[in-house]
Image 1 (cartoon, rainbow, N blue to C red):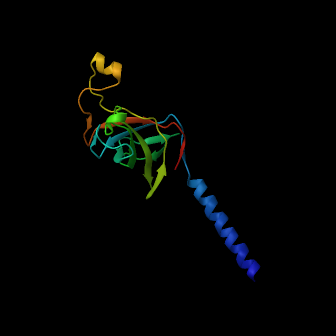
Image 2: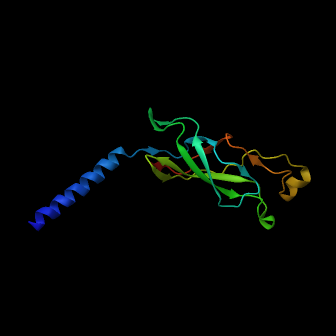
Image 3: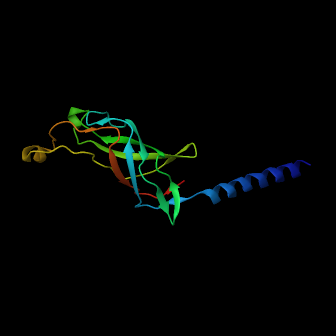
Length: 150
């Protein structure tokens, strides 16, 4: 009797695993993810701070829409001017997208949004003029550097 219950549990677990892997879809590396920012970002924000965005256009693979426009996306600040000793231009990257109520990790390239102009001297020493501000509603494009399984 115990053996029958054990076998039933094993079969049920395997069936759930097979069903979930049939629904899994992969977005290949190199795919462009266009997003619109929801959060305000500035060059003075702390490295590691999270921000929210939304997928700006459907992401399709082989004619199947895997991410619909409006899907929540999340990212983080990779570099900024918040620490004067390690002052770098503002760069951001996406870290996850929300799919069916769960966050799925993604790995994208870093993007330097709205870079302010530089003088020759500032470029020589790696400094930028002014403060970069990325307002909500700004568009950015990221590329997946690693395939993402949804």
